[in-house]
Image (cartoon, rainbow, N blue to C red; front, side, top):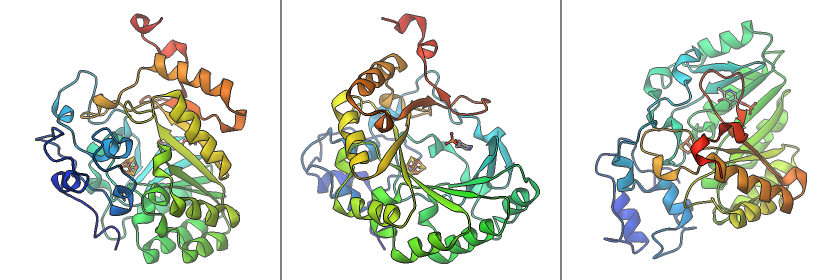
Length: 327
Ligand SMILES: *Cc1c(COP(=O)(O)O)cnc(C)c1O
Ligand code: SF4
């Protein structure tokens, strides 16, 4: 329902926010606009630089070709173990449960991913489940996408139970932005189903700015944590959204106040059309240093980047700052 009512026309979004004629839109974006009204309602009317709006509005900057920004920056197309399963890192595999998301984030590295080739087929999970059954060294499955919580309860519960039947899978991690975008999706039925699984469930949500957090979001986190499902958060460091120490500090503080642990702060994946979100690693490291000074250790996320071909996400260090950028 919330998905059906979502905004798909950037002009309509600008009309709602009383910003017509004040923003230059992309003319060639091949990643459609998609923003649920629940998320729009947290934006400020009349503010063209609203941090939530910036995450979803296709700006004319997307049309600029910028060297180094490509269509598969993290090398996922080479890591597809079989239909809809990415097995890049030891012990854990990522299952692309659906191609759909509850929102389209303009900075997302998956904006160029040819999902139709790997998902959306009938019995599409069979090969992935077969791979998991025969690889006993995998003890954790990440449900990702797309966003797994855009699946219907029937499909999602069926998938969860089939994964849970595989004895060596001890943990199921659900990577989802739905508790932020459409928090009503975290229903009591969903929580009950997760509680009934043998495997331990971890929820990893994706929130970039404190303005994304309203009482419905807090309720969805509480429903998880109260029922024994730990919640982690990952953010992407985004220019014009959260690239200030004040905002990052306030985000991390709010998260731990509500029992959500900051997990990763991602350096932007250099996907085509997202160059206007880039923050230099130099600046990212300075922000991290300041965060460590201001926050308890458990409230500080790890600043990481994804490099094609690596055996894990890599922690960003001063080695990752190009010489010209060093202060
Ligand atoms: C990020 C990612 C994971 C999970 O990495 P963690 O460091 O365990 O959070 C697993 N598989 C793929 C393909 C990933 O991109
Ligand atoms: S995968 Fe996550 S970051 Fe990418 S568009 Fe979907 S919700 Fe946004």
